[in-house]
Image (cartoon, rainbow, N blue to C red; front, side):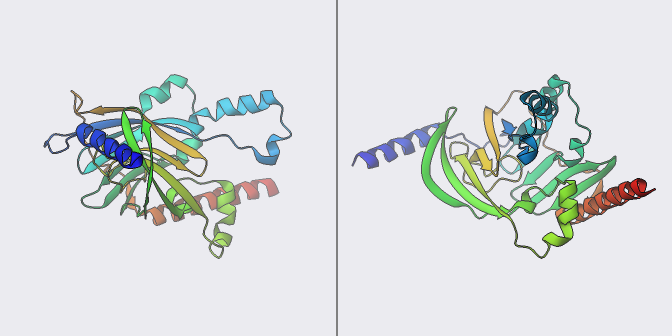
Length: 270
């Protein structure tokens, strides 16, 4: 009986505080902080604490980022919050080639667009939205002023990090085609109080805005939400760049990285 009363109370709170999205000019902004811990592996065991600290400072812009999601009933734009990133004053020219650009999602038309730049060449990645087979849970928790519920899914790691590359990935690219696909577990927390099926990055498809995502060793957490801001932002899909799919983009970059590696080997052998 006590459990029933508790669940009923939660339902009443959600119903009484649910944001209305029916207005034609409805818009919201959600700010997210993404953090990935630094992993040095066996190499880190040979380093002093001072050396680890110096590397952590150099990689901070790559491991800790702030994003903003601008959304309405059907569309969203997700991009790095450049104003906050600029405060650090640090630059990461190599890492910028492998970080996501401005991303556009339209849940009505199942459209995904993302602009990417690789060594000065602009690409427009156009594809369908990433399908996620969510399993709905009953666990709940409060994030800020919003009641959230847990959902889980799993997906091939390469499908989530298709814009991210490394030399080791390039070396193992051919071999990985015959190996078992590496899957990663996704834990998401969404709020029915904002009844839109949007979220940060590739994550979407739940009956409420996704406020937290835990995947692999990365956590993405919403720190602030503004509903119907006084100054509205036009949600505009990226348009510039060579149009490619996610798979085509991966192949192009892998090929380019293979050229980098071969040129480097040739210089060493001279």
